[in-house]
Image (cartoon, rainbow, N blue to C red; front, side, top):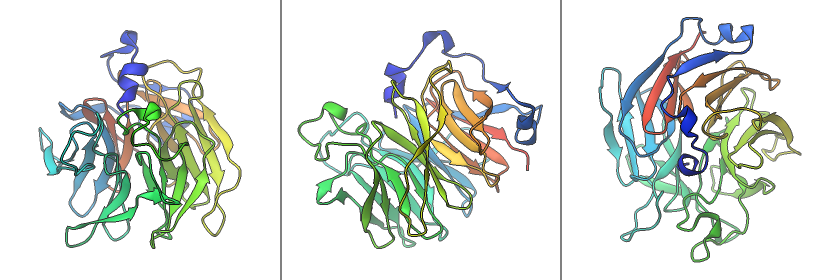
Amino acid sequence: MKVLRSLLFLPAFAFAQERIERLDPALDAILAPDAEIETLCTGFDWAEGPVWDEAGKRLLFSDVPRNTIYQWKEGDSEARVYMKPSGYTGVADYSAEPGSNGLAMDDKGQLYCCEHGDRRVSYLTPGGGKRTLADNFNGKRFNSPNDLAIAASGDVYFTDPPYGLPGRDKDTKFRELPFCGVYRVTPQGVVSLITRDLDRPNGVALSPDGKILYVAQSHGPAPIIMAYPLNADGSAGAGKLFFNCKDLKGPGAPDGIKVDAKGNVFSTGPGGCLILNSEGKLLGRILCGRPTANVAFGENGTRLYLTSDDRVLRVALKQ
């Protein structure tokens, strides 16, 4: 979500040295006291949506303005193009953020993409072709699917803010839905609305047992993370506030979010990446000195990858 760069960029924090801020001793069970922040590759317009590809032993991530998915492997000093175009296949200029955003892998190793320009959720088949999972709600095209999480059932939960539209929330030419929804789509392509109550839903993640859906909102007046209880049929109950970022300082806002096997929540937000326990207590932050878009676990959960503005970072995790 490149909008953070212009709306939430705070010069006082720009290019500050990356560091880990420890706010609770419980963080030591997640990040070793001597954990360091590595810079893996740089030079992107706005890096987003990282996902670890275990079969390929590589990190895949989007550069939304460049309409490209990149790949990075251990030992590489630079990332290489994996897919271009990644989110817009039209022949004319469309918007400043036309590419793919959030990426996810299912249990078959298929890559799912939230596509801004083509306004859909898609996936790559084993043969390398691309298929559309969903591109509309009740006949009206999505705004610009942003991020997604895949449940054990195969259901895909995703958010649909306006950041990829040419006019964003003011768009009158292309926008068809008057709200920014959170949706569920079944493997058969049946779409249902989870909520339309958030102004800017962004990152989305599931608890380890699949019973809670977390949604991060990148909205200046209400930079919050919500938690929605999920029913056995995949529908959701009333959401509750999980964490409010309004009192935190630093560049960025709630954006990408992931949950580890123990229920700890890793959400980008003011300063970089927030680490919260399953009760919503802030244990610490990975301070990146720049707006940070998203995170992903890799290498069997032993590494945390962060897409932070123009670069990709990594931090070792304890098991």
